[in-house]
Image 1 (cartoon, rainbow, N blue to C red):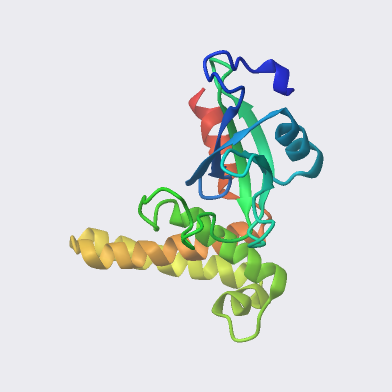
Image 2: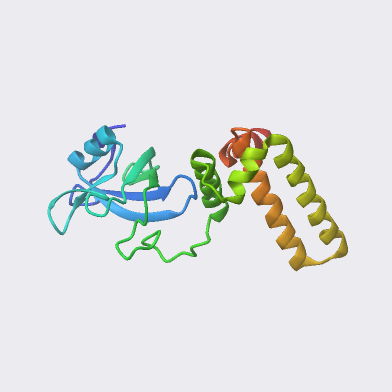
Length: 199
């Protein structure tokens, strides 16, 4: 993909609107603009770089805050006049210190956020973390815990206790995410499998 692949005749200023989405949580983070130089720098460095209309210069997101946006994928839209970048943010994207520049609920896409936290625990294995203790015990104990929590959620479902079911089902999801990580599998892997079956 090159900058010249886009049709910018409608924008008038030759700038390409760019939507940034968290590749893990799928949360929309911000909107910015790129000229050709910003586009090429983004591709070359893997860090999202915009053209600042107010400062009239290139601006790599995070150059002052260290909250960089690391490019995962880039997609042009159907009309060829907008770019979607899926990225991994280093921290809050908005200058207000919030995750997103859009005031959507903070818990939106939280299961993917939790997956990221669990992956971090597996890499770092911090002492005192319950998740670390699960990884130390290994796959058999993690799988056993998934089974126990699943049984408890089934009991609450059969008893018709919605609130308790939500509580126990949340335990199932958490422990299942730990099991996925232990097995080197992600939510995205499951989505690909389910999409394949759907086709």
